[in-house]
Image (spheres, rainbow, N blue to C red):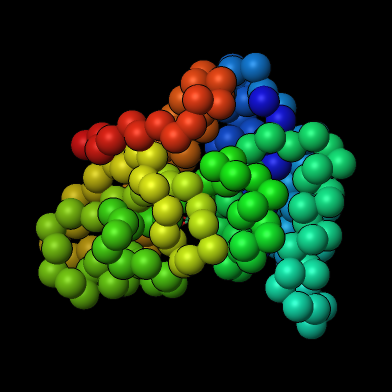
Length: 199
Ligand code: GRF
């Protein structure tokens, strides 16, 4: 399966996917391109170090649909079949969602539907919950919405800070994203598939 990854920043989930494709943990696949909407995203260099083609498509004040149309074009030119959002900090337009029906996934650092949006880890800490985690889900045009594919739980410990909790969740994000993408590939497009909660 040809995979395109969209990033805006650090790119650690992108690297997890690239390495899992290389090792075969995500079988019969290729990361065809990593696209960033930020020219200074640290993940771009990390993708190049892994030999993956990169592409910067900044918004430059354009309407969301015009920006998305350029990204869609770059993905389609490379035959991308599955789009993975990995710290991509923009909502997708309905144009984008329609171009890849049931073929766009995202990772979010909370047990959705709890704590959508930014600072999900901080929201979880403030809530007093004893557990948080991460969610891989299909993407629609709404923020952190769409059917859940897989979740992994993480304990919230006494004395946790946003940094310590985020780091503990991030370890599980890398595992969850690789597992979910692997299952999507193995399902050969028989989507949707729901894998459930892993603790
Ligand atoms: C991750 O916590 C992901 O869940 C969220 O943004 C962060 C991206 O981190 N959507 P990275 O760029 O993959 O390292």
